[in-house]
Length: 283
Image 1 (cartoon, rainbow, N blue to C red):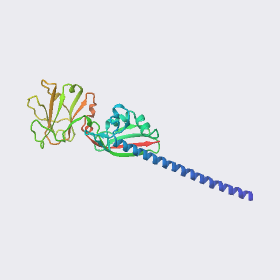
Image 2 (image 1 turned 45 degrees about the vertical axis):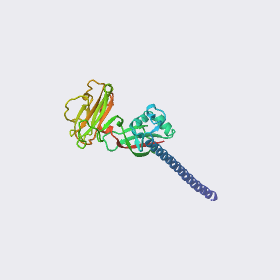
Image 3 (image 1 turned 90 degrees about the vertical axis):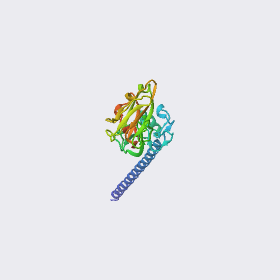
Image 4 (image 1 turned 60 degrees about the horizontal axis):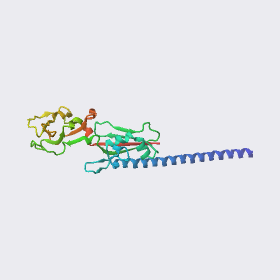
């Protein structure tokens, strides 16, 4: 009987010991996963905050594909706009994502993807990075300002302008720009109007050195082609005025390359948008 009792005791001890080992192993795995998760959260948080608050080094790294990437917008005064995303830099980041993001920013430790989602616009979201998410995906979202094609904007009619016809700026909105003959060979000029203003806005395009009566035309499109409106007379350049019969309308004067995708000629693509930048990471 003693042998049987001893055997039973040994079995109980082994069961208890196995349970303790299993518990320790589970606790160890849980602790490791918590550490990994904390490290992932810390690293992704540092990366996304650095991206949206720094333009990168050098500032125009996206033009050369070299340096340390950053996505923040630098305004015309040379000031960095915090919590912002330059669309041109986002696309450049996506074109060499493995090198710039996986290798450089995450030291080959995490797989990631990013998506820029306009929140108050008809613009589609833009996603870059790796596809096929793994297990335990960690996601971070930041609210940012994004510019898309704003760099092509010459004049914003919501701002005060200058008029050569003495239009009262509390009733009209006028702006002007200089154009050369060579410009219209390489660029197309458009008046882009927010759809809410379409058919409710009239415009005049005139040139300072051409004396000719001009009449108001109704804006029957949200993208009005202007090249045919330019009259150079005997000069190689002209000062062109655009007049709108409403103060501070949601309208933009833009210049885009001839090969620009015309399906993107929408007002929202050329203004500053409120967006969400979503960064997803996984092992």
